[in-house]
Image (cartoon, rainbow, N blue to C red; front, side, top):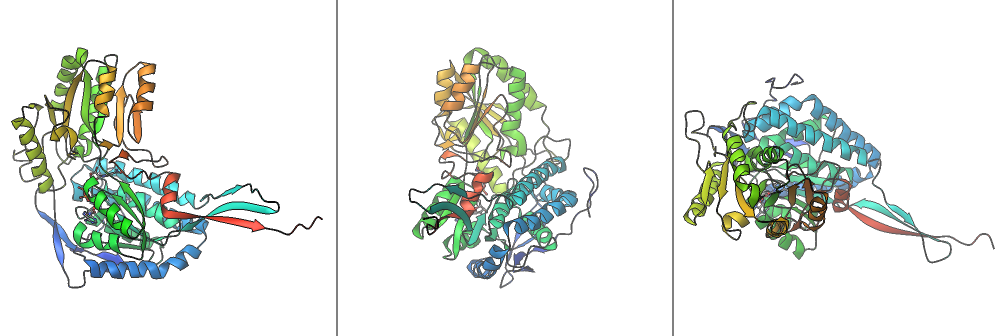
Length: 498
Ligand code: NAD
């Protein structure tokens, strides 16, 4: 299936209604409820999606709970080998996966394949983690006593994800949860149901035992909330907005469940007067507009030294004008994931304009023949906005970047930190001292020098400070701390020498 070169169309057949995966079987909602998944490139109905509620969540959690002790008894190395088989199957079917991601999100096949490659790297890393899952041996203050730690699964993991990079988001959570010996219920993103379904098919074909990975389709409040509140779910891992993250923190707090929150960002990219301006402009475009700005790590606040501002902005506008919007491999950015998101972008822009902002480029829905039925927004550059205004402070999650003028490095750093978020940030400079000061003093979970505001590599711990998260880190080995509990072990022996 689908093992051909880039762009080969050989799609895994998606069902008319995308089902749940519960206890190793595909099933629809108890009363046959469904909703429609809309194609973001042309507004047509792609397929129907099973609409799950509390009843379906209860069945999925029951299935995960019943399978957990058996799965935990599989040695971690063997669990890793089963996960490795899933990765091998993903590699073999990478074109199928990319085709589904492309179809659901409207991003190009090329970008969908890149995302699938990232998911494969992440899966490989965690499959090998079955050979590590390190505890610690250490010293004791008491004679003939030996202290160490071992790792144990939490139990049932509830996984809730966003739609922006659907296959990467699935893998990022499922693999560390399972390698640690948990079973899982994944609440798929409502805008990318088929990607999660396809992963379920690949995982089951590769030999994941029934009940170990359950995938439930549905909306956040209807299917996500019952999962968050379920007393048998020991850990919730969530990737999504800060608003929903705050709700999840409260609900899991009531029953003291473990929780990992990977939330939003309003990420600064600073361009100093000594930067390579062409390189900086290229990275601004990638940071702000790749994946149509639907990235928690997108660079949405571009902070530029006054002395180079005018020439830099001129270059930036010229390069932005050259960007192509559409869903083919020749395009640079695709549509927003749904029409509501597109309308949200347009109202952010209108409000900013009413408050005195200048739209340097873009700002409108694309209405020409090719784009008019899709959810396409022009890549948008805005200036003359107050750093305290809504568009400066709220994560918009679309292809919109605001530009700010600063007189010196100190003003740039202060402005970069003037945000309730703290996910990523980047500085462009050739000055070693500035770069290092920025590394130390930016309030963020990730800092980059001379490139873009991007997420981390799969073996590195990603996450934010302030309202970008709750301090946990995923993926990397650090994610293991979310999905396992440490147990202290003390062994006391008799003194056989005396
Ligand atoms: P969202 O918070 O609206 O939804 C995310 C997921 O949560 C979806 O599956 C949704 O169905 C579910 N959900 C919504 N309400 C819920 C509720 N009351 N209870 C339980 N589940 C609920 O976010 P979105 O608009 O789909 O995604 C964009 C957001 O995700 C942005 O804020 C972005 O920054 C963030 N994000 C963060 C990271 C990261 O690693 N930090 C990565 C990708 C996206």
